[in-house]
Length: 201
Image 1 (cartoon, rainbow, N blue to C red):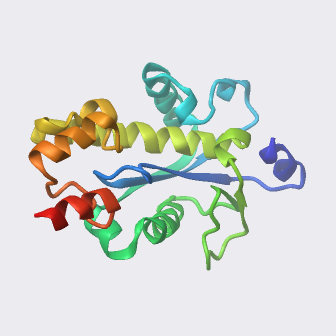
Image 2: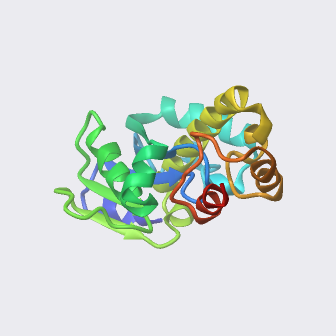
């Protein structure tokens, strides 16, 4: 575990950062940062990449992580921000905002896959980080559960698209709904499939 090496070197307050919704064509991007009170604790033994967990497992672990964190920060990048900046830039800026939103400055930051350029805190971008660093896995769960809840709320406002089931990803069901009803304001116009539908008019 990456955290074990960092802690053995004398570092404390290690923040993990991850996002949810990068590949979706609808809804916001959600980014979370979290500092666990003891990332080596057995209580986090079930914490892993949110995509490997069932919904009920993520919900349980969400509460566990919140209750056993020193600090956490969850932010959203709106559809308009994604369309204006591009999803990658919105993700990087979102990671920066999430880290700066922590009420305790971390001594070290671990991110999933992408470096936060210009961050004035030592950091490491970890390939497949949500599979090898419990702090990043914890952040992925916070981001995923938060985004899923947002998409379920959006489903109530836009029931034609089945957002509660596919959460805005480009599934066959979502694509069929888009072909029938067209995109609405929650869809990312900068994404190729949405832009194509808009251009068809």
